[in-house]
Amino acid sequence: MLTTHPFDDDKLREECGVFGVYNHGEAAAVAALGLHALQHRGQEAAGIVTFDGEHYHIQHAMGQVGDNFSSQSVIAKLKGHAAIGHVRYATSGDTVLRNVQPLFADFEFGGFALAHNGNLTNALMLRRQLVRRGCLFQSTTDTEVIVHLMATARSGSVIDRMVEALRQVEGAYSLIALANDMVIGVRDPLGVRPLVLGKVGDSNVLCSESCALDIIGAEFVRDVEPGEMIVLDSSGVHSLRPFLPQNRRFCIFEYIYFARPDSVVEGHSVYEARKRIGMELARESAVDADVIIPVPDSGVPAAIGYAAESGIPFELGIIRNHYVGRTFIEPTDQIRNLGVKLKHNANRHMIEGKRVVLVDDSIVRGTTSIKIIEMVRRAGAKEVHMRISSPPTSHACFYGVDTPKKEKLLAHKYSIDEMAKYIGADSLAFISIDGLYKAVKEPEGRNNAKPQYCDACFTGDYPIPLLDRDTPGEGSEVTYRAEARG
Image: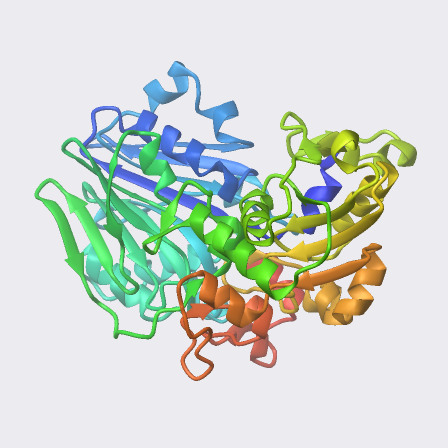
């Protein structure tokens, strides 16, 4: 039976990455490269839509970018000088071809393709209203709600319809659209999800992270501002501000885990931010130890920072097998129980007889932490201390990240001491919320009256109303998370 790797399920998962390019002779190939660089944001499915001046060309596929967009025959079918693409991660049975983006629709003004990173928090309410008006939905993604809102909008240009639709939605989104020989990028008014603008030669690019610019040799121009709409067309780059300004609340977990460490987001190097988080964690939760060991790969920069601040040597005491992939064959329970060894193996020489500090980015359900600590103890560790470069994840995210219901989150059920006992650690400590803010260059820490970031998964402070979840009769949290996904 082919199943998802069980130890991947103990991480928060970013659900989407988006990419768009205008005025490039090899737009499809460039989009495929960009999506490859964004593969960490979604591994379940990928899609590209191109425009050649007269016709749209569409390719959707289940699986990873390299498995579906690496052949010349596929790229040759995607003709055009403009392209948008999407990588997707989904759960709850939503990984089906009809949900793969970019979505495409024919309007009276012509074709329209849309790719979305984020989550709409009133998608079910809007969907029910649209169905009552006679709209027929082809997918279970919240992204399609935007398409139908545009279709039922008062007559106007594609920009007018898009603005009218987005003024009706609540939620976190970075969108890239292709229509009428232009590529459009929009970021929600709070700027929860990232979106950047770049340039390569005479071509302009929009994408989720700067690492997607690096792979195509593009220059980083700037972040798209919260609430800003960018239009790329034959006359250049145009900026519109169709929404009322709000206090920005960028997702702070991008710095902890989601973004690639070689990206620059919101003006900060992700790698340097993670090192500073590790240094702050060491200051807050020092422990006598012989070696600092990261849980690879996401724990590496924070562990480097922790080691530098503590003066304790850094070593690769756990080696990751990079060739496992996200799925593998599990024929028996006995083999399944050995699953962690498929991805991680202890480097006994660096562990035996030592007091070990393991550094990881987060604890969700705790299943991976249990297996890692067991493995390190079997390798002869004298003590095992766990240090986490995020505050305790005690609340679910509804803004485009796959998290369990809060009742299944270890930090929601247990105190830190109880969590340490549960995972088998001699001690456990998380960075404080103020320490995290200081590490991302907010020297006074979190401003509780006016928070600088979205940190709802740690604090329960949701900056965007959870209308589908809170409105009576609009369905349970499970229904909301299963259906409203972009």
